[in-house]
Length: 549
Image (cartoon, rainbow, N blue to C red; front, side):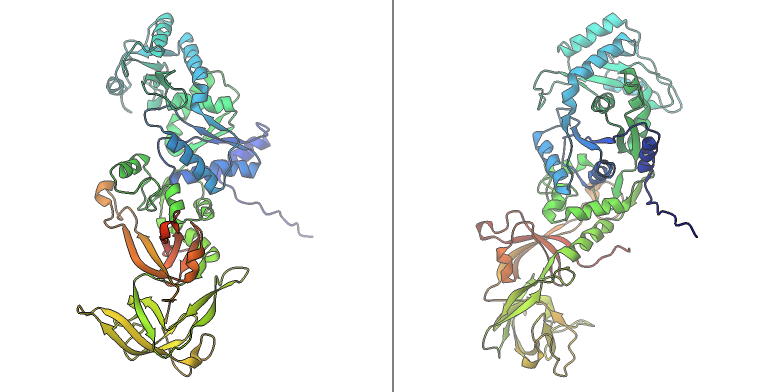
């Protein structure tokens, strides 16, 4: 009898490391962390890290902490703290503990004192520029600081005076004493504490010295019992320093273990938090949650389903090599989700009046909400003598291959009758103001076409009960190509259609409800939808999928 082999699901290299650690009994509980600095809003790049760290928690039934790296109070704000929590919850993740680097400031200070006592740290009087200029390069070793061999007693005294506020910002720093000739530049006596007079959101003015990230992070991981400290590839060269701090502060069990993965790069998408902040501060966008922004809050305002973002992150996978993903791939997953979830309604962005001359009484139809839904539902639409159609759906002089309404032609109204052209009116500038048609009674949707060949089907809304809408359409913030962001900003990336008309059912929906506007695209009701009698939608994405599966 032929042996049936059990199918083994493929795993990424991080999971292979974790599986090996579990198999060898190095740990029985996987604990990860997501450690954002609260100096801006999370963007799509952070979503990949979120999905990895919280994904490990879910897959291995472990834990994942949310820990704020609040070691630089001059750039941090409670607004960012709150936005990060909101974004994580919106994506569907739950953290086990909410922690802060500042929870450990007393312990970090004591560890720094212990390093001084061991002869592994010293107070240096060099400025930041002097440290940079004496660090050397990959071909030349660095120059030792003239203060590198201060006595333990002098270093302890100076470091305490730094803490007590005796010196000005930048006047002195505490450096680790490692190796100025190391081939790894990060090991050439890195700064581990600096003087920074800034009121901290949580500790107030207790401290005027703050630990550097490379010193603080391994200590935080170790205190919390993190097993796998998963970070992006630029920290690979920092791993020897991570391990040096961990070991010399007394954590010698092998954990936490740092693992690096390639960060997410996307075409026509800004992944620099510094530059995103610049866009906000210069008014190029309407805040961090502007629907054009690649921030998670911007994507929420735009109407992106969180499930689509998680599916996208899962599809791009985890690798060790940096690469760039086409933004169309993200839009594909958004569109894929909305195709199944979003109900269909009729909207016209640029309406012109159409009069059905031979219609005497209103009629009510049932329109299917979503042909792809598992449970089929419908909603009612009313048609009367006066309706609105899209301006582009009537052409006095049609372009080649035009299949909609023209003088002497016919067109089918979605879910209703075939119309036959009668006449049209124009204003003094030659713009069409009204089209007059007759409907053909025996051509109601679902019945025969009365022997007529009609290629065009157009959406419409009833003039009696339609809703006045404002539609916001968006383009990418960046033009395609390379170069400085300032030279690549897309002009007119936000367009407003202030005279749109929608079906009556759109008056009764909630903020963030998503729809497919037939033949137009996918749209989401804004967070203030319906307030002060204003009904506005943000464009999520178009109907056309340019991403090849």
